[in-house]
Image (cartoon, rainbow, N blue to C red):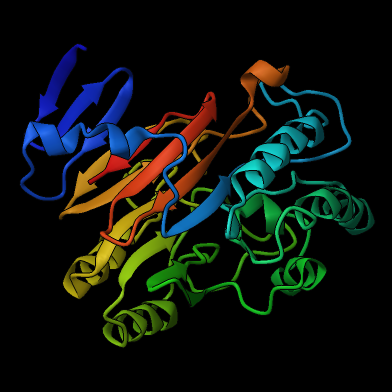
Length: 297
């Protein structure tokens, strides 16, 4: 087995990036038990992002109608693995010309998505509220809030909403530019209070990226990161938006960006994953098709 050392805390094992959050011997780091197919995690989460479903022809690399077939494949795998929680990291739908058309897109894709798992969570993406308003999207998927937290099996999850303009106005009805993504002060204050109130190890779920300063990043993501780092409990952030596999570590927190489901034609260009969290805090992302696999130990 060939191991390539990528840095102080990362190595590449047979194409899987493995990161150590503590000091482990190489024997412990590469234990076969970590990679066994029948190893049952303390919690198993299905992850998808950037489905961009729409009943319209392809545009560039985005194949909107094929999302339903790709989602069906992901659903079959999620059911096989008996996931506990299902998370959609934003841009479930693509923009439509009218509210009525957009509502039809949303009803169509959510009919399939909601059938996968009862315990499901939607992160707002900019395309989700390009034509719709936030309350319209949330009402259609049966979710009461755009940012909130929940606990499962001793782990804390935080869902963030970065679909706000710099002036604090929420996205809706084409009133924004997609590069102007922000977390408003009210949400920052809530986040700090929420993290201070839990001792559980925490996973953050976001759409726009919290680890870059380019057009795909939240404008005030440094403010968000300071709160996450100060808590001392955040293990990782999972995000989408830029449609690519990426992984960064900032302030001891892993920022894992997942590949978009909408990109590319055919089943070979699908992308989805399961996140397995063991009781010892090990996080394993098992990627399918174009999604990279990760392991945080």
